[in-house]
Amino acid sequence: MKPPKFAYHAPQSLTEALQTLAGVGDEAVLLAGGQSLLPLLNMRLASPAHVVDLGRVPGLDDIRVTNGHAEVGAMVTHRRMEVDPLIAHAVPLAQKAAGYVGFRAIRNRGTVGGSVAHADPAAEWPLVLLTLDGEIELTSANGSRTIRADDFFESVYSTAKRSDEVVTSVRFGTRFERNWGFWEFQRRTGDFATVAVAVACVVEGGSVTEARVGIAGAAEKPVRCTTAEQALLAGSTSAASEAAAAAQDAVDPYDDVHGSSSYRKRLVFAATKRAATQALGHHYGVLDHA
Amino acid sequence: MREVHVTVNGASAAAAIDPRMLLSDFLRDRLGLTGTHVGCEHGYCGSCTVLVDGASTRSCLTLAVQVDGKSVHTVESLAAHGAELHPIQQALKDCHGLQCGFCTPGLLMSVAELASNGSTCTRDEIREHLAGNTCRCTGYQHIVDAVEQVMRSLRSEAVDVS
Image 1 (cartoon, rainbow over the protein chains, first blue to last red):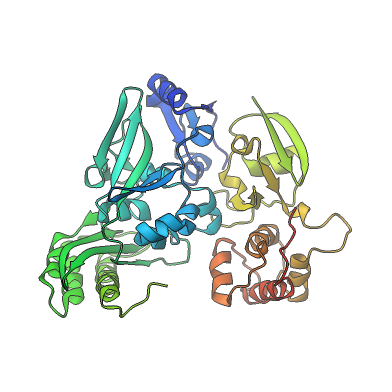
Image 2: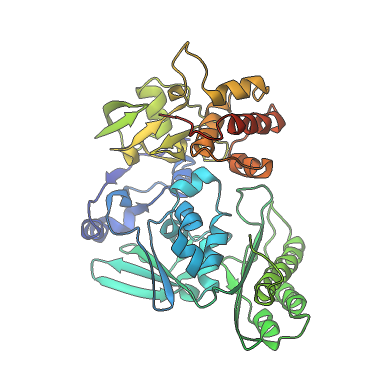
């Protein structure tokens, strides 16, 4: 239960970090807050030859709200997402989800960028980014590229990030700030989600003009459910239930020790119904998110 | 080997360490601060919780090199050996909030963080905050009682954990 030996790099700038990765990237892992990496090292599930610590790299912990997006630096902690007033105002769904990440001590150190790069299929940030038309900025010694969340998350612990790249920031769409819902089932407080669902809508003149339904814990990566989104757009009085039924039909979850496939399908129904009810109810002033 | 300089419980400490050394092992084996307990070593049990720059931190999920230049507080900072107990420790004692004591150091540091701004919490909020500290003896009821007591007694003043 101790980390294996590795060569440790503590770059003082992003440029230095990227140069290091350009040299040893294939054999290196990036250390952000370490709350996913350290368990892997302690349990010897990962044995990287090089660890590149981003902890001393300046400029990766800004939060900016501009132009329809909230841009969050990769080293911003989960805890900061939970308490930052800019996030609470511009992306309240992200603020709500932040409180479900691990325990307080994990949230104090774990980072958004680290979670995104780790890509656990039941983690909150991949789900919230997918739901809010999110983007991930990747930077290498050759420059930066921005990739949509739909294209970034590929499978369990697997993303489009190359080994010479660093996740430098993520962007959440802010136009869903009024109509959103989030519901997550954890077996115990602080566990990974068994199932989590995020719903985001734009409501104009009493009609739902845009809808997003994201589901985590039902596949090897978070997924959007277009049939559930169509149910919300159709706008019947029982839209939340219809979306929930559509989501339950659409998913084909895995079995594991935390729940069978059929159990997860029923959780998807319950989670979608509750998150969608919040998203629509908020519009009608029925529910309070507090 | 890599040189680290850390302020631990107010005193500066420097050592040359292997970068793979966990903060928990650094505190226990290098500095002799064995109050920080090592339980699961993958971040679940909470026994190794310390404060890094005032924020609760799993010392088993933190490399010692990551806290270079930072300030760490361990359970030993709450009360000097033989001195009067810290109010949080006294409350746990009064309310029978510990039995075997293995989880207690980490629990105390989590409570220190919660109580550090002088606010009060509901029992549900206390339970939520302490979800990351596993105790197999008490059933938690008496721990929550103790935290309520300490928060009541310290309502108007911040708890000094330095």
